[in-house]
Image (cartoon, rainbow, N blue to C red; front, side, top):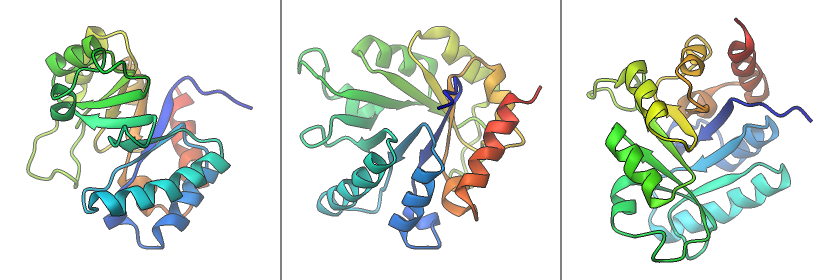
Length: 201
């Protein structure tokens, strides 16, 4: 099995998916990304957990790590926003979870590391249709985040095969991609294209 140093992570968005969502998740899992993060802002808690359990069953079948948005009472591998993290203290709660946090500044990344999280996702880096009214923070921002913390830093926002190698050059540990994974015709070919772009010099 090939182990890639630079990670490629799928972040989900059901709204962007033009086929059955769980069918798409299985196709993505079979393409072997380094992680799937189940993000869905349109679910209530009950719906989210139902979907999450089905996605976790798929990801387990393909041996792909899968992060769920919060719900630490159910899942041991969770992702959260910075406001969520600021309302709890991982050390006080004796957290045994694998925890990632989305950050939008260097200070937030440093705070997250001090709280004991396992990784941060920094963004958004390039222009993206997901946030059309918000200016991208850019590659220099990403470089500063990478220099400021020792935990893994993953970039998000407008990343594709044409610019992913710019992410590599900042020192980031990986890239998170949403719309590409949700809309590509062939996830296996898509992730192969991304991996090739990362290794080409």
